[in-house]
Structure formats: C-alpha cells, structure tokens
Amino acid sequence: MRELDGLLRTHNCGELSKANVGQEVILCGWVNKYRDLGGLHFIDIRDKFGLTQLGFEAFKGDLGILKQVSLESVIWAKGKVNERPASALNKKMATGEVEIQVTQLKILSQCNIDKLPFLPTAKVEATEDLKLKYRYLDLRAPKLQKILKIRSEAAQIARNTLVDAGFLEIETPILFKSTPEGARDYIVPSRIHPGKVYALPQSPQTLKQLLMIGGLDKYFQIIKCFRDEDLRADRQPEFTQIDIEASFVTQEYIQNLATKLMASLFKLSDDFSISIMSYQDAMRDYGCDKPDLRYDLKHHILTDLFKDSDFKVFSSVSQEGGLIKGIFIPEEMGTFSRKDTDSLVEVVKPYGGKGVAFFKIENGQLKAGISKFITPDIFKALPEQGNGTWFFAADGEHSVAHACGDALRRHFADILNLKGEGYSFVWINDFPLLEWDRDLKRFMAVHHPFTMPKKEQLDDFLNGDVNDPEGPLKDLLAEAYDVVCNGYEIGGGSLRIFDGKVQDQMFKALGFTPEEAQSQFGFFLEALDYGTPPHGGIAFGFDRIIMILAGTDNIRDTIAFPKTTSASDLMAQTPSSVAGEQIKELHFKWD
Image (cartoon, rainbow, N blue to C red; front, top):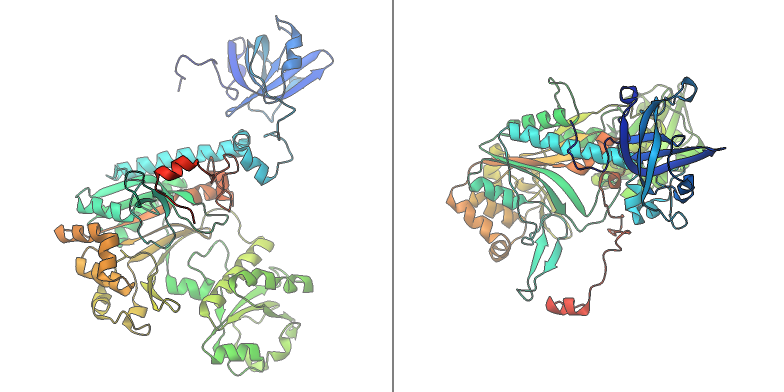
C-alpha cells in the first residue's frame, strides 16, 4: 500500500531493490554503522523496516559532516539508488543488492554517544535491568520490533475473527468497584468522595455479564486488567485479555469459537481441532492443569505399591493417605550423573518437596538411590522395567506431590530437549467447582464466584451443607474450561450463573453473609432479578499468546513498557511518591 503524502521520506529503509535503481529517494532513520575505508565512506541507515547502505561518492556537501554523525543519531539522506557491484553484494540484507549514493545529508537529531548506556543492536546484550531502565532504546532492537509487530497483527486478527462471528466490541470501565475475584485489587482513592475508592478491574467479569442482561448478545473487547499479586516470568501486574461473552450458548459453542480464534491467531488449517482432557486426568497424568503435551513423560500413581515397603518415607505417605507419583526416563532419552540427581531437590523445593527419590535400571539390575528397597514384587508391578531411571515425588499432601511431579517433568523436558517445535493445544474440562480452605474453614471458588455448577449436580449444590468439607459440595464440578498451549494456560472461561437463587447459594458457600454479598455485589444481584439469559464466555491471556507466537519465555518481551517482577517501572521510576498536597486532596492518610 502506498504511504500517504506528507512524510519526510519517500521510502523506508527495508524496501529498496534493483527495481528502484536510478530513482532519487529520501530515507530517514538511525545510524546503525559508520565505516571509513580510506576515503570511501559508508553509513548503514536503520528503521523498523530494515537497513540500507548509504555511499558518499556523489556527495555535494562537506564530508566533514560525517564526523558529527554518531551511532544512533537520526539522519535524513537524499540520493540516487545504485546497483552494487557483484563483489559488494550483501545477501544478509534485504536491500543488499543496492545502495544510495547520497547527494544531501542532514542530522535531524544528534545522539550523545558518550552517554549512551548501550547500543540496542549490539551483539552483546545489556543486562535486563539496564534495558528496562532505557526501554525506549531497547525498543529499537529488531527482536522487540518484531514481537510488537506480531502483537499488533494478532490484535487485528482477533478483532476481525470476532466481528465476523457477530460480536460487538464494547468498552467497560477501568475505574470500577472493588470486588473479590482471587487477587488483590489496585485501588484509586477518590478526591470527590472522601474515604471512598475505585478499583482497577481484575477482569470485567460482572460488567460483561451485565451486558448480557442488557441484551447485547455477543460482546468482546481487548482490555487491560490489573492484579496486585506476586509476579513471575509469565505474569504482569497489568495485562491484556481478549474478553468474550455471549448469550444463549453452550460450552460447545464457546469452545468452537475459541478453536476458530486460535486457528486464526496461530495460522493453522481450517480442520484444526483441540483435544479435550478432564481436570482429573490432567492432574493424574501430569500433576497440573496446564500440561505441555509436546512430549510424553506421564506420571504414574504408585501409592498403593509402596504401602508395605521397607522404605519408611514412602510407606508412611501411602498409609496416611498421601500420594506417590513416579516418572520413568528411558535410557535412550537420557542418563543422569550423581550431580544431576542430587540437584533435583532444588527443583522441587519451591513446591514444598523435601527431596527426590530415584533408582536406575541397567540390564535388569537395580542400582543407586533407593534400589535396595525395590523388592522383586514391587519391580514386577512397575509399569516400566526397561533400562532407564525412575524418579519419585511423594508427599502427604496430594497437591504437593502433584506440583513436585509437574516440576520434575518440566525440568526433564528442559534438560533433555524434549519440547520440540510447533503448538500443542488441549482443553481442560470438568474442573472442581469449589475447594475447601482449611485455614479459613470455608469453601473457595476454583474459578470465580459466578461459575455455573454442572447442570446434573445443581440440586446437590442448592441443598448441600456449605459448612461441611466432606459433604456433596466438595465433589461438584463446574461448567468451566481452560485452553492450554505448550504448557501455558492461554484462556479460561465458564458458563455463568444466571439464576439469583443459585448465585445466593454460591455466595453463601463462599462464606459471604447476605449483608456482605449486598455490599459488594448488590447491583449485580438485583440485575439477576430482571430476566437474565443463560450466558457464558472466555478470556484469553493476550500477552501469553504473543509469548508463544514470538517464541519467547518472558512476558516482558511482549509488552512495550513492562514492569519488573517487583511490579516496578525502572524507566519512569514508578511506583513513586506524590506531593503532600495531592495526598491531602485525596483525604488519604499513610500509616
């Protein structure tokens, strides 16, 4: 597409070819490299589109200007496109068949090279903290330019796909009400209403449901969300969701729509489909609800096998209702030194694990680790008996054993290079509706308080004792679903509660008094009384999708101006203090 008139340049730095030879052109960009070859001067000029070589044999001005042209300065160059001689072709550059013989040159903006903290295109990268402090310099690097282009294109694909499916893009407020949705809210004190606050939305959950009550039928938006929680490589305090909600839908409709959206975003074939796995099977086989299925390494449940073992660590776990999981690594997949096995305790320690037991099988002989406790009966009952190594995660808490087994599986995939290329998608269905918090002595929502119980279990939900951790409520399943790609949860959703009686029971199960429910969700509960269509939706983690599309494992690479893992902006030095007068206006007092 031809660019609009009015630019300072006629072309960008990545588009000229032999077809342009003889044309007079104007380029603008940054000085990427300068070479003085004994009187022959060359500059590589750079913009986000690429590089072009400038020559100065036809220059009409004073070549002394080149001494003022430092790296990263912004220049304007006018000249004629010449074909390079065969000996000077550069196949590494898209424009490597031509150069511009410059007749006029202007320095639009001088870079103070003595203060420049790092070269954004240098082969040796700066530290991450330095790059975050000078993010505007790091944005000049081809890696981030490419990722942000992928992000822009993905947003347009998502919009087009959803609009074609009949969805309306509707904005919801950023300043809203503080509601408990699983993480801390970021709050904003009000100047006009002393002592009151707004909250930045963790998600537009109640708002999109109100749009369905309002008859909008199909809604989406690409929205910023905010959660004040501990961060990691795939999480930021402000993040972007592709948020979707629709009325009169089934779970099948939402999953079909999401599959179509994934096919568009990941450029997959029209017959692309996503496999389905229950939450229970995912936890049994992989120890997590977001398994990476590009490789196998399934867990084996071995709890009963060790019930009468002489290895007391395992027998006590088995007899006391704990969980023992094993992972078998065939010899052809990898072998392990004493140093390798000793280091595994550090892999499981962050998840509550105290160690990793193992033994090796070599030509039918058991060696090392806990091999002396593996009796012939136990060995015969193992599902794998070939050459290789067995590793075990065991704990009295099932959740700890699952998490340690998952950590080991991911660790082995990394050190043994098992992940491979491509994308592996899976739907995780049949999540528990509730889980009992032993400290708070009440149920917690596994997803959020607006998730519908399975239709066939609705009577058990409505009649169950909300104070009984062993009653029917503990076994209820939710009309909830997550979509996972390459070990990342990239989307999650559910069918929503649309009956006020069901919603009242949910708040009761979660420990809300009627007064607390009214205080925090009264506006929503009242809306449910005025005719609510059955509805459901899904929200995709847009930043995580871009991580996968761009092949990076750091979410900060996908965001123009990200925060650190301590939720700080090193560039703008935020969070920051504000003037006392402003604090006073907000009627806000520090402890």
